[in-house]
Image 1 (cartoon, rainbow, N blue to C red):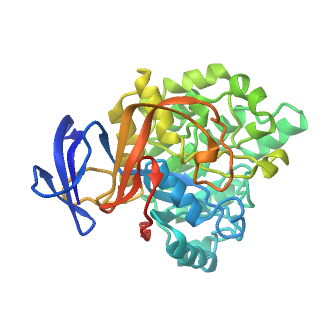
Image 2: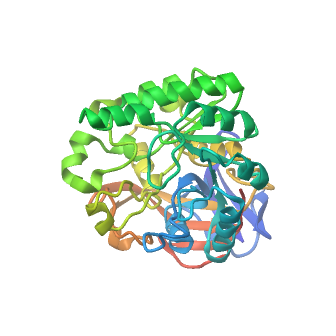
Image 3: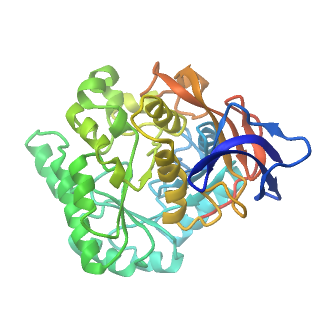
Length: 409
C-alpha cells in the first residue's frame, strides 16, 4: 500500500510525502513509484488509540459488542481501542479475562486491548492473570466493581506492578453517599477527595496512577502534584455542561462522573496542557436504557471530530490532538508499534478533511445504541479514510472492509 501525497507531521514539521506500507508496517517515507491511494487535500494522523471504551461484551451485547464497537471505532478514526472490565461477568478473574479474549479475537475488526478490573479481594486473580493495566473504581459506576475501602485500594496500589498504569475512577464513595443522603447531587467534591486520596496513596507506594475522565481544572492540578500521575479527559466534560445541555438531553444527560457546570467546563480547557490523554469513555446504552436512568454516552464516532472542530475554532492545535490521542496512549500502555507515522510502526493511518463540515446524526453511526448527545451538532473536520495495518478499512467516511483485529494489551 502506498499512500501518496500525504500531509502529516514528521519531526515536528508538516511535510508532504508518500507513505509505503508493507506487511502491515510502515517501511518507507518519501516518494515511491507505483499505484496507490491519493491523500491530496487530506491530513494524515497516526491511527488513533482510545484507551477508555466500554464495548459491553460479554453480557450486554444488545447495547454494543466487539464487532459493532470496533466498527464504530474505525468510523471515528480509531485503529486501536482498550476495553474496560465492567461487563457481565466483569473482567476480574483469570477465567473471565480469557473468556473476553476469545470473544474479542473472534469479533474485533480493529486492534484492541483489555483492561483487568480490581475488586476488594481479587489480588490472587490479578497476580495470576498478569494484566498490563488495571481499572479500580473508587466510586459506584455501571457494573459491580466498587473498591471503596483504603485497605483494598492500598493493597492494589502496592501489589500491582508499579510502572504499569493503574486506572482510577476517582469519585469517593463515602462522599457520594453522604451527598446523596443530603440530596445535594453527585457533587464535584467527591472527585477532588478521591483524586487527593489516590494521589497520596500513589505517592506512598511510588507507583504510576492514571486518572480516568478527569472533569475539572482543580482535579487535574491536584492529580499532577504527584510526578507519576497521568490524567485523561473525556470529550463530554469539554463540550457539554449541566446548564448548556442538561435540559436539552434530560434523562439522556446522565453520566458518571456527571456533567459539570458551564464555568467548570470552560475552566477545564485551561488545564489541557497538563492532560496526558483523551479517552472517549464510549459507554453505549440504548434509548430505552437511558430512559431508565442508565449512565453513559457513546463517543467513538464523535470524539476526534469534536476536537477537529475545536482546532478549526482556534481552541487547540493539531499536535496536541496527535499527542494525546495517539502518541501518549501508545507510550502509556506500552503499545510500542502504535501512535506514530514512522518507519517500523504499524501502518495505521487516519486521513481527515480538516475543512469538511457535516451534521451529526446517530442514524449514520455504526454503534448499536442508536443515539448521541451531539445529535444535530454541525462540526468542521471529518474522518475520510482509515488504514489498519495498510488495509483501507474506511473510505469516504464509511467502513468498507473488515480486517481481523489483533490484541495489543
